[in-house]
Length: 428
Image (cartoon, rainbow, N blue to C red; front, side):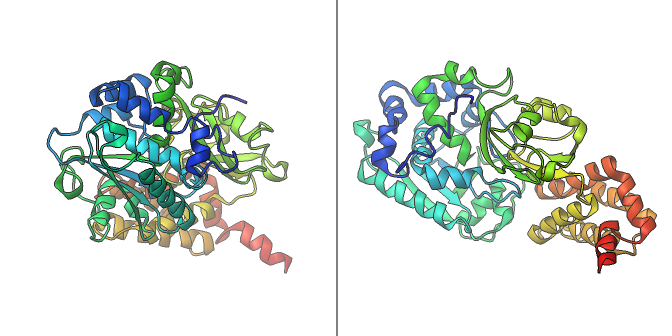
């Protein structure tokens, strides 16, 4: 097994408590940060480590920290509103090792000269939220949060906030709107959060897994972290493996590991369910374009996945086997984006509705040949033209699906619906 970083001690009994977390080098990174480094030096350390955001965009973490405007007060938001279909790593990290996240939040806040930090947890993740709330309380009691932390002169307040289950609140500006007590609508950019963010102050927003990685980099150094992964995609990543695979779950692997290893290696996925043939891979949660089975040996790093025509996204690797109807699968994904569109902008509100209507028609009969090209045309009017990335996300599976599996769409038109539905109906 490759060396693990964020999940190294994940199954240690009692790791969610302060006492056991300390036994596994807990808060040593924070102590080192406060005693040995100035905030600007920590920002440079993150730049040198090559750590990139694990939430979706893969933006260099240290560079993001350095963009913060010099005005005060500054804020940190931990985006733990994990709601991307196929993604469940942050939930595990919060439930099993909440102090690792809390330590990462404190170190990042110190590095960015932040006085108030928020951890925004998805509403449905009730147990995860309770675990993080308890860890924050323990950290306050131990003097790791509050006034004059460990005699350093640095003070910090940490607030855990539960969302109400809106997918749009995973978008950073909608998250800030929600934190401020308003409906989770995305904001127009610019200005970007680094300049004008939460309560009008400069704000750094990082994903849960990103912040959970920070303590180990402090303890072991940026050069150590750089020994994992590839030249441009450093470190390890927790990949969420789901779909038609024998052993779904969270697996931490170095960036640059091939999809084949994750899916077929007995230590990880163990192969396709029922020993079927692989049909497609969704590599980074439902927002990412679908890849065909011919991309099995593509390596799971940001550059290689982009070169293959998709993106690493949130790390949710969804496996689709030969028996799956791609039109039905894409319809299910598109229904999600229709339901989760906030409705603020017309292209997304109307586009996701009509995409779902067309796909439903193709899947259940009544679809026409021209509907296939109409789907792609609507996607063209939606991608890049909506208020936030949700519009782009809604088009990814459709554009890539039609490109890779057009013959299935044509077959649905020719047969007047999904052949799998018809075969099933014939049995009865």
